[in-house]
Every structure is written in structure tokens, then in C-alpha cells.
Length: 297
Image (cartoon, rainbow, N blue to C red; front, top):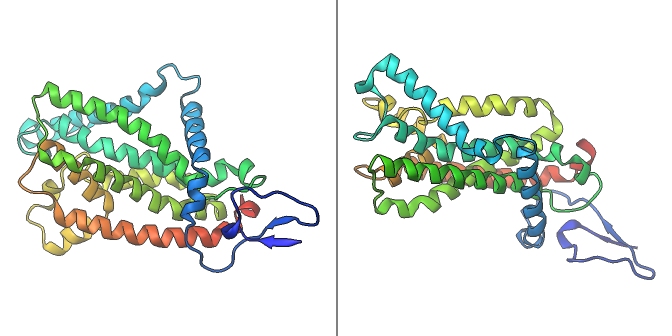
């Protein structure tokens, strides 16, 4: 009998005369096996498609919910701030209607929040697969992020329509949008690696995910601009606020599409550093816990 760990498992393993392949859990801190993950790319796509079908199955409006959620949120806060602050006091980008400024921030935020909520619960949601079939466990949190990108594209199309309606033309900064979207995805993945692994241990995480996403939204300049709350504040407070990686993503989207004096370099650099640390740490933590997922879920 030959024992083979998942890290050295061939693309296809077959039993032969006098030889049996046994998959054993890895030991210690092991990095992500990217070539193995690439071999399972079709499974990632299949699970993402399944998530989309399940999410909108037997729904009257179907995938239109991907647009309605940020639209309704934008309308509610537009009315609320108009009543509380008046039209002249709205926390928006200078020269841009509050509705456009807020919806522009909600588009990347919805991508992050949807990916975070679904990916954080992905291991428990796929327990019937994890306990029966071997595949890289990272496939589970990756698939919901791919599904969330479909909703992002639809919401982004509506944003372009709003900008056209209000006569707003993106500048050269729009070329940075793919990188900003990638940063939003990386942020969701980096946090989800920690939360999905912890959710396999403690089911409390599953119940805390919606609350976490809601609280995180109010700590991010989504329904207000960063400048509206940080104007006149000391530099250290700006730095602490910038430790929220989604703050850099949201303000980056506003700059890229709605214009501004200069890119929010400080917030973006801080976001990249924080996400890189969370992603590397989360990857090693996820792999460390991976060997016990089948027993825990």
C-alpha cells in the first residue's frame, strides 16, 4: 500500500494490482497548492453556477435582485439624509448627485458583502461534498466569490446607466477599475478564509456573518464619503480608518468613475497591505485546518 498526501496527489489516481492510493491529511503549515487548484477549475465554475441557480430559484424577480438591493439601499439613504441634512448637506462627492455617489460605492460593497457572507458559510453549506469526495477545500470559498461577480457586473451596468443619465463621464482613472474590483475580491477572500475555517469549528460564525457585513458597511464610506467624516481629523485617525481595506476600495471606485483631485493613494496602499497580510495568514490558517474539515462539518 502506498500512502500519498493531497499535496503530491496526481491528476488522476487509480487503483492497480497490488497498489492502493490513500489520501492522508498534510501535517504542519502548508501553503496553497495553486497547480492543484487550477486542475479543479471546472468544479469551481460548476459550484458557482449552482449557487446562482439556487439563489434565484423560484424567485419572481430572479437575478433582478442583484440590482434591486443596492438601488433600494441608495433610495432609502437618499431620502433619510435629505430629511436630516437637507440637499445642500448631503455627504457626497463634490458636484455629483448623492444617489450616484452612493450607488457607485454600493456596487463594490455588494460584491464584497455577498462574497463574504456566502464564502464564510461555504464549508458547512457543502458538507455533503466535503465528507464524501476529495477536492481542494479552497474550492468551496472560491465558488461563491465567482457567483458574486455575476451580480457585480449587472449592478455595474446600472451604474453606467445612471452616470449617462446625469451626464457624468469617467476619466482616465476608470482604467484602474479592474484592479479595484480585484482588490474587493481579494478582501472578501482573505476574510472568508479565516471565517469559513472558524465556521467549521464554531457555528456561531454562521449567525454572525450577516451582522458582521451590516456593521462593516457602516464602518465603510458607502452611504457617506470618507472626507465628510474625516475632514479636519488628525492624521492618526485617518490611518486607523484606512485599516479597513474596503474604505480604499470604495473611495477608489468613486475616484475612478466620478473624478477627484487625486487618487486616494494612502487609503489604497493601506488596503493592499492589510489585504495581503490577511490573505497570506488566512491561506496558511485554512490549510492548517483543512485536514479536520471533514470531521468538523
